[in-house]
Image (cartoon, rainbow, N blue to C red; front, side, top):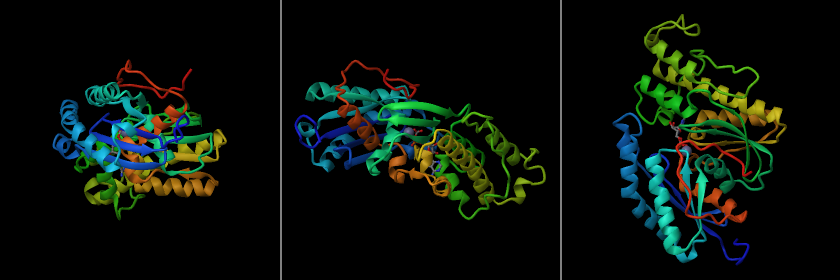
Length: 350
Ligand code: KG4
Ligand code: ZN
């Protein structure tokens, strides 16, 4: 509800940071009136990854129709929109610029506040769209194509980074290993599918131990899978030959190695910072093995685990609108003088 008018508060969200063109309308931070996601996945699949120039051109083509459809589905016009929330980083600059320019133009024409939102903050806030009574502090594991971050959230907008990957992000590891296994792009869903029915304990791929830190590393794991597939020995796989092991076992063993490390650090962080709630966010949080393993670990430790539904884990504009809603409630009204950033740390306001 708008604190000034006591009318329902509608936030229009726009997300174009990578290869998804998404527009959403979220009412009162609870109700997703629309959340359209036009994926460019098929377009990029033939290149084996997202091609930035192709992505930005496609955003230009898709944004207007997606915007109109999102408003129509939500049955709201610009008169009913209280603010526009748009991702301004981190992401592909060309892609971000399409969303940000559109948001600024719409804000200027319709005299609406435009709120720049960090994409990672959006991922965390997917949880606030669906879970009631979230208690602070909690630890959130953000796992996406570009990030693997453990965040302590003390209250709305207040973030502390507890750990992060020192090399590949978890999603990046899925995508690169999928390529090695000949499974195509995007790798996460492809590996999950290939792993179905496989034995996750067939091969003991390495789990990086980063000492006393809560950091992650997936480069060694990725190299181990690559060497294994090339028939080169590694300490873990010496006695096995790739041709003797079913693909489902290789995919399941890799997936389990990633998931074990993610859940291990999430649980350590919860213990160290004495929180009673933990959360997952980002595209890799769509992974069934991660969801099941985290659920079991949280249950065993007596913790509440928050996970967004799968459609809200991968990139979407409803999560950006949701983060924007809390910025708006804090009194932020934005201006049109903000930039886009390829790298944008999740910082608390100083
Ligand atoms: O959050 P997201 O949609 O975009 C970024 O912000 O990067 O995450 C995309 C990443 C990709 O690396 C993709 O392979 C991975 O999430 N992903 C998955 C699954 N679905 C998407 N990884 C593992 N299992 C999945 N089911
Ligand atoms: Zn994302």
